[in-house]
Length: 104
Image (cartoon, rainbow, N blue to C red; front, side, top):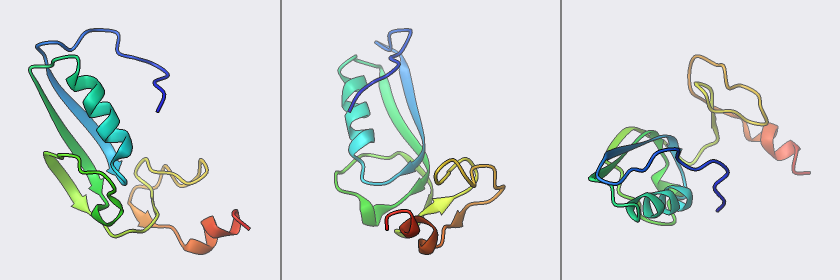
C-alpha cells in the first residue's frame, strides 16, 4: 500500500470515522485502520455503504454496514468500471461479459 496524500492534521485524541463505499477483501481498510490507530485517536469507527463478506480475506471490524451484497461487480452511485457507470442513480450488477471482455 502507498499513501499518496496523508492527513493535514493530527488525529491524536480525536474521534475518527472512516467512511467507505465498499469493503471487499479488507486488505486496504485493515492497513488504513492500523495506520490511523498508531496515531492514537480517541476512537476510530468504520462505516460502509456496501460489504462483500464472501470476498473478505482479512477481518476488519465494521461498525455500520448499509447493505451486504453478493460477490458481484457492482456499479453506480459513485462506483465505476473503467471510469464508466459512476453517475447511475442506483447500484447495479455489471454483466460479466463487460469486464471479462477486456481481459481477453
